[in-house]
Length: 304
Image 1: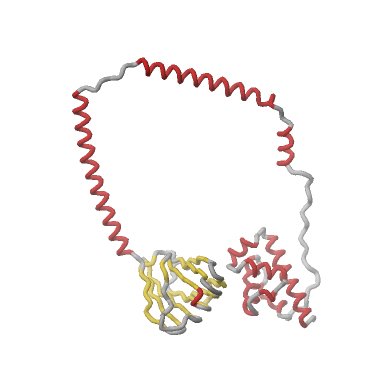
Image 2: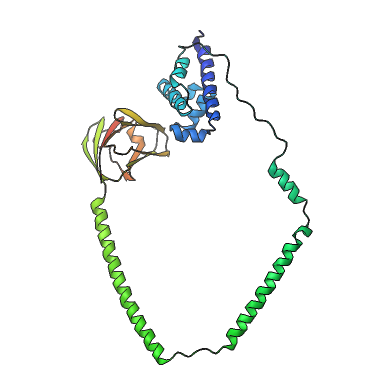
């Protein structure tokens, strides 16, 4: 068994190549894999290049290998054992079949054929266009002449009276419609106020805050935004991680809780550097009495 720094480096390169080949076999791009695994693009590229020293630490290396492997249907545990040196290094790297080079393309040939056409090929279309324009001009001239020759019809007093009566009825109908619309708008506004979601901090310590979220509309979507620094965020449901990501300043992501989730715990590595919203409404978990450090935020959720 090969050991030491050189052995680990060779295994890292082998693991990166294995992951990359599996991704290409599934026709996944790096950006598509980032959306699927929630791992930052630069860390995915470092994994594929075997540059594990660019990752945050040993815990993240093992976690990222497993998450990447699951996304491309590989055995993550096997790759982690290979990284830790518990398995002998594999010297044969998988090779992808190189695509054959095709001389030219159907599109290029089609363009070349089109370029050979002369203006004579378009002559029938030009003649048809001229004939159509001539017909339209004649029709327009005849219509204009008829309108000019016809005298305007004078409006009688009876028609004026009818018009005034219709106008009066129309005005009354408009007023009634406006009144009904205002009434509906007021009713809807009151209903919205009654159904509005509320977020309340019920307990708070240095290490943990408990938030009650009531009248939430399913699905409850959490929005995370990095601010001013780096913060690792995890979402635990039923004592298992359903989401985890390392945020930099300005990075924003959303995560929808599974349907029916009544309790979730947010694990914030550095709560000072993260903002959290639930269905676009801010979750105020930081208490000014305590320093914003590592913090667990427990969400108790009830729905409409």
